[in-house]
Amino acid sequence: MLEGKRILLVIGGGIAAYKALDLIRRLRERGASVRAVMTAAAHQFVTPLSVASLSGDKVYENLFSLTDEAEMGHIELSRDADLVVVAPATANLLAKMANGLADDLASTLLLATDKRTLAAPAMNLRMWLHPATQRNIAILKSDGVAFVGPNDGSMACGEFGPGRMAEPLEIVAAIEAALAADTELPLQGEQSHSLSLKGRHVLVTSGPTHEPIDPVRYIANRSSGRQGHAIAAAAARAGAHVTLISGPVAIPDPAGVTTLHVESAQDMLKAVEASLPADIFVSTAAVADWRVARSSEEKIKKGAAGTPTLTLIENADILATISNRPADRPALVVGFAAETEKVLQHAQEKLGRKKCDLIVANDVAPETGVMGGDQNTVHLVTTAGVESWPKLSKVDVAERLVARFATMLGAQL
Ligand code: CTP
Image (cartoon, rainbow, N blue to C red; front, side, top):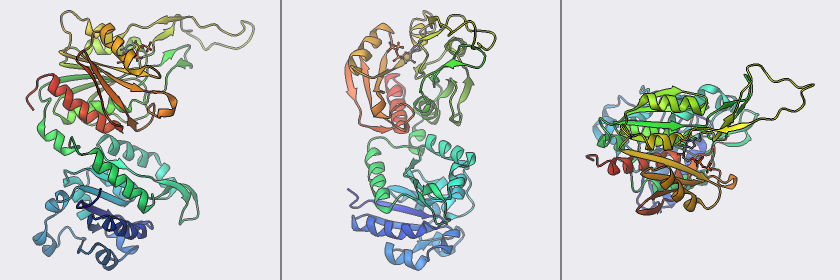
């Protein structure tokens, strides 16, 4: 499966760099060619001679090297590969990638590449758990970067926890998966070049809603917002003007998107209506079906009144409300159906009941790991029938959906 594939391997400066040597061997055993780039810090851990001997190619190290640039410039280097792999991806390298810094050959080619990137993070567990690193990871994921690891384990520094780089064979498997998932639709830069939604307004809801019980308590659900945020980001990359109405989530606002934050279903409906008109409405949010009829102004106390009884009333259906707008219904209305059983049957019912043009159905039973996870298996349900997609990352699902929306809208691709 790796026969003939060209891997550009960026080796960062961490103790795990020694595993990059084995990774090169494993990739070449499988018929892939490996071109390696080392950061300055990587030289502290492995020598260019070892890397060059194993890869069978020269090692690229210097952005300003006349010979390197003459033989193969950094732009060409970044594009002449099927996949860019960063291993070890240090905290510093990930921070540069997330922020678009380009101050050496490795970071410059990571910014210049139009190919998919797979990162294998490796660092001390405190560095991995630090909010700054976690923020950078979330940004990179929403940019379409794939990750393998890090694993839990004992570290060179004597601590135990997450931060150990994935083993070479795990990275090989992730490389195979990244190359396989990427066959139909290009990711990152390439999709944005087509600007298939240029000039369109795309309105997306995402995340859960919180329905207050009293000032400190609420009813919520397990939606992370990842799929909706990824769709908003992908639509922006496709050239659309995107408004994202987000319930409370722990992930960052996507780049290039106008994000409005709301808490309850009622607020979400108001924000959606205020954001019309739109060409496309994508209702990804896991809107609470019910709210507490009369939420308490004060914190409800234990005591004489006994256990409180919550009376629930139904929230308005935002998707159905927007689908039924007489004057300004968006040309394309897309709903989601999160089901735990009879997925397609329920989705077909929702398509008719909510009068939308497309329902994206997914199985969110706990064993699927979809709610809160990185991957999703979706089925596209329209009046024309059902199309089932393979298991993909939520970012890949988003890219493909946005391409499909553009086609359905009859946009010029
Ligand atoms: N939806 C909405 N407003 C609601 C409830 C749901 O806009 N009050 C939207 C969701 O964003 C999603 C679609 O309707 O696009 C389906 O949501 P889902 O929770 O699967 O369906 P429900 O209509 O709530 O039906 P049920 O919970 O009975 O399956």
